[in-house]
Image (cartoon, rainbow, N blue to C red; front, side):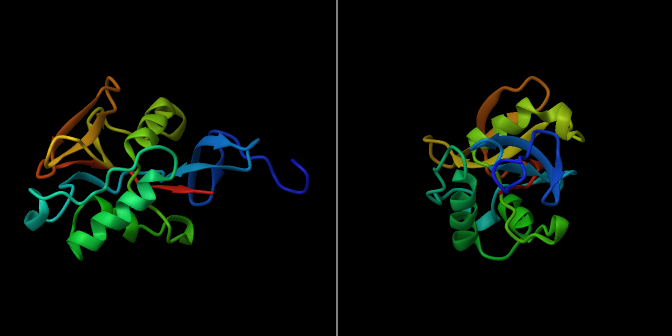
Length: 160
């Protein structure tokens, strides 16, 4: 315990998933869903695949703001950010598509969280190159930008 609060740790089953990052002496961190939300979905609706959504935040909790911006632009549909926002793992309703930085933190703990394919996973962070978005392969760990129209894997995260 840290004061009267429990200390959370990487690999802990908590908050509807697995903890993969902690800070503030284990008081805060990030949780990943225990399974993929998709094994192949586009980043955004077809109508917006060649427009900018200004989902450019990176870093811890950047994915939450990005997910909200993507959904405001694209509305209802079956795409990466919407699948994460609709996910209700552990009866929590604050799941989101991770930022580029959060996705890399998740990759670094992929063995602890488990269930990942050696394939590309979407981040919520748009590239500085028009109409592209950052993704990361969970095979080698390399990050690159790709077309929003390309189907990739999705794993939702949430903060605590």
